[in-house]
Length: 155
Length: 155
Length: 155
Image (tube, each protein chain N blue to C red):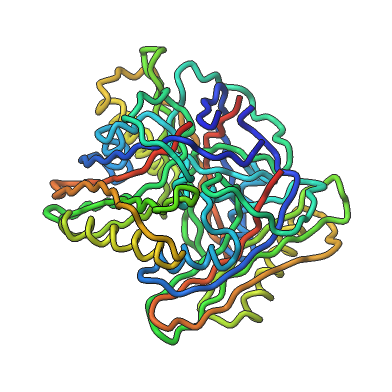
């Protein structure tokens, strides 16, 4: 069965410096607690009745379905924020919506925007929203930095 | 078994406006009938003897292997087209080739090009082509818009 | 079980020309021996005790978890290199790290850098490195070209 539906999720975020932008991204994943895995990037729905769990210890090298936001830069002094949000529907039989956003901006602004995006997406669906959850990481680049935020899906 | 091969497929396309480019993309997926799922992006082969089916009602939040094209813009008045094509081989034991193309251009031009791309790819393989199938969506941006076209793989 | 961990791997690389940049990418995959498959892109860990195998004949259209680097250009005369590396830990219970890098540069420079990146990433983890493996493909663009290098994961 190729088409599968996750049943659990958790949010993580992290920031880091690295030798290159990819090294900084890799280190940000480790700081987030999602490192040493193989992220498989998703566009980005929380299945109905998907249950939040504490971040789990993921087997090293596992293929991990993940909706994520990331931003990297090698310009010292730049402010980076990556953020994710989830809008949960009042109707428990409907899926939730995950949104990702990143910008060269402060955490408060980026996190506010990613929450507005999730609300707008549920409004487009005609779904009433029960609550919105979000997580973000802000980083000021020293040499080469990355910010990362993700919803990890699991079962 | 990590390595799996789909056995069915269908084509979808859609366009939409949204609060942000990601919201427009999300809404275009819904208009296409592939919304509320977790697209896993593929590079982009139709397995041999893969069978076309009518678009199915996908479980919300399912991980969905998909080859897709998308384009977004927040410049009012711009014309956006996203297109996919499939070239089917005469030899039924050989795979087909999926191609994706998008541009700030009219549907006729983008769809013609994506079909040429699929033909060229099969020619590179030395495979005779039985027929080419394609689908595209053209959108004129009002504020922030997206066009999306995809081959959804299934089994 | 959605979360899975590969147990085998192999490296491939290839370069090619094509009608468009996507056609060149598609042809580079074929030249690399990873063509006619559906690559699912990963960020990019080698599971502990993952075993190297000779490149296998992959079923056409199979979903193939792959960490890869690619670069394309339609500027005649440009030099393109795509490279991947794997740093293997002394501690066999720890994962290895895959890095990807591409640039408009010669193979020797790009391959050296991608190895440095893998070493830096293992240093960040506090892991001693037993050895580094790498593979790259350099291409001089005639009309429209692509370079591709990958670690294919398998089980």
